[in-house]
Length: 249
Image (tube, rainbow, N blue to C red):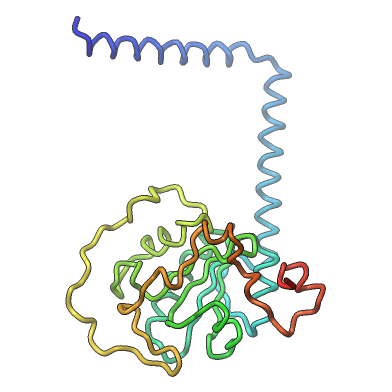
């Protein structure tokens, strides 16, 4: 028997011992043990259902538009995880983002999905450095942990998949993701040709192909040093609200 066969046999025997041990534990369970396991499982299900109902009561499961800037602060205070799409009516690519987020919202109840018209919330747009439309701000525990600017990080193409959007959003834990975070779901070559006519919409007139992503994205190291929503102060917030958000520094 060679060394490789020796190792395989050793591993096989170890697995057999683990299986035998598990079977023995199951066989030795008495009525009280089974009842305890049943109650434990029931409590877990009740907690999950309670959490689900809480999320639904906060508007999770739907992709909705916020009417004004102040709602942004309300939403990010109430929900631990938020995906916020900044759009304009004159930017066709925003409809592409809408399509994907409408699919992801009911799939990820743990996260609130909303959108804001960037032209109607100039204060937020300025303070969050929304210079390209569409932009998606990712918020966790009232901190902006990341930003998806244009489609550059989504394959640099308009026909990216919902799975690609989901994978990109998941990078900072804003949604629960069971796949491989290190590898995009669909590896595709960047298009070398121009996408044609550039989209211009007033103040938001930079094409996403021209962006330096690092100029806008916040990484975890920068958050530790204090970069967060605390940099954003809304004049319409009360002092109490500002203090609760940590915006009164």
